[in-house]
Length: 421
Image 1: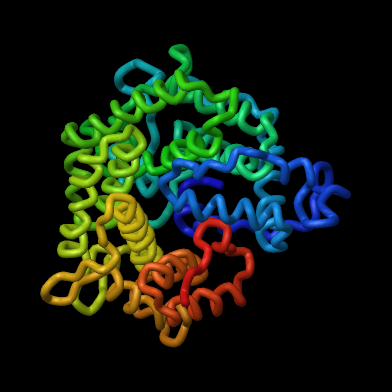
Image 2: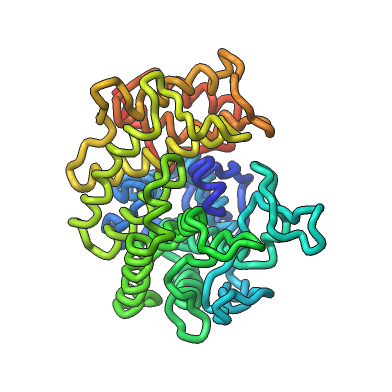
């Protein structure tokens, strides 16, 4: 599953029909194959997009035959099986050449920019907000999407089943993209979301690094496998330390971190994740403290997010920003920081923003702002579940369940099990 899709639905996985192979007769008694139930690796995984303890509980439910969890794991395993024979992805395989002349540099086309029909060569490109240019496929973002999705599914398949073939393939993909000198990506995003006709690095390109968060978590899920060594882990941490340094010190990265919209929020999510991954809790705490500035700058006392409402996909981006704020608040919990309940003196808070979206999410009122494609209200389910847990708020849990009745594909119980009293 790609990063963009996962942040939209947070494991919007189709409930699969009964799978064959490993899920055949061995699953009849409890719903999970007996051999898989005997996996002894019971340490809490060190992951950052979810609570590792919750994932351990989900694995216990899987082994006990919980039908919903078993169904979801079947789908994960099915998708992992599909990439077992896929050649590794690498930035060196793209068609184009970055301005640096180094194919190890990541490069992507900004999604909403198109050739100017009034210019012979189309340059400089012009912006059409919300309309994707298919030229993007000629560069590195599609392979990165595939890497993100593959490592996520492979690592989770390994975590739940203990089958080493999934860890082996996941490790191969990660070493190819991040470690092997002949195929690795240079740890910066200077040419991400470039626009033909413009020369300077674009701050918005930093957001594409969000896909790396699946890979960071994948390293946590396959930890302990003989196919992922201590040297591999150290090399991966060194790569992300360099990327973190690039984002926090380059003009491109610093500008993105200071954006007063979802781009700034997602840049904070990335940097805080990488700081925690490399074990730099001091820097992580400093980065997470900026959550308060995001609330102050982005949300009005009535819960609206003005910078997201001006977009042509205003509901989507209002929700998208809340996903990032929830990620920051969840990471804050690891360091004893209560960001969920932060509120400015004039009433700005994440909870206020959730409450603003709630009646529109439940279609009790029509969305009053521009949304050029139909809004996917079920994409709010993960936000509502996480808010229900954080605030022990039944109305959010009820709203999430109501939306799940309309769209059963979105299953959050695996990643964010309910704890509402």
